Image (cartoon, rainbow, N blue to C red):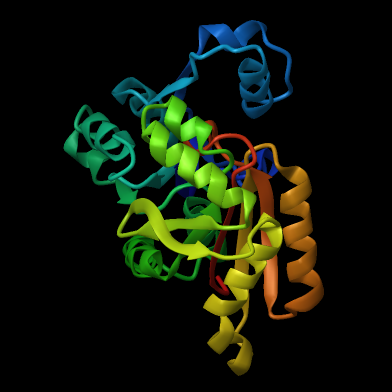
Length: 294
């Protein structure tokens, strides 16, 4: 039996090959969208575009993993590992953390002591970076279980996440944005003004207004340079993760700009945004998360 296992949520947006390579246990989220089953598209976001073109107003609805989903994951982990770390999306964005807490109560006290649940206060690629940090500490084997938990909790506030959403119509359609504001944001986008969203204390909110941001990839690249300016000057290494809602071209361009111009930065993964975060932002959303070298 291996020493320490890792359970992550689908919201971490980690590439499947990373999850498989390090034997992470993945807890899926639920998506309800009857209309989307018969629509063409290789992923959810392509289907959302098709639905909009056809005038289908109903959009996908997402729900947190059930207590049963987490209990099943814990059963698997207890059969494979002596102890297990569980990382969830921010408790301020989803009830996943609470589902995990409730699932843990179904086990005897001796088994509960083998499971540590951590609220990432992040989502998408930011949550993914925390999962990679946990995996790194587990693979190194230099710290005991308690030390790893302490290190991860200290690591969380150091993770930065920002990005730009696609068309405001997706937030409007989901009832999260008034029509008048959606129209205003769309007009602003046409002249290159876009809100920059980011995580603050576990909540996603608008953190700045970017001017001349018609090219989203360049806008995010410039924002990264601003945020790591002092790191560049001191030569500190930075780790970056990129996730996108079927905007591979933009994500790839962002990655290429970073690798070409910022030698201190290592892009550790580029992936499709998980459906839970992506449904709210809509197709073309582009996110970037960074932290000092993990």
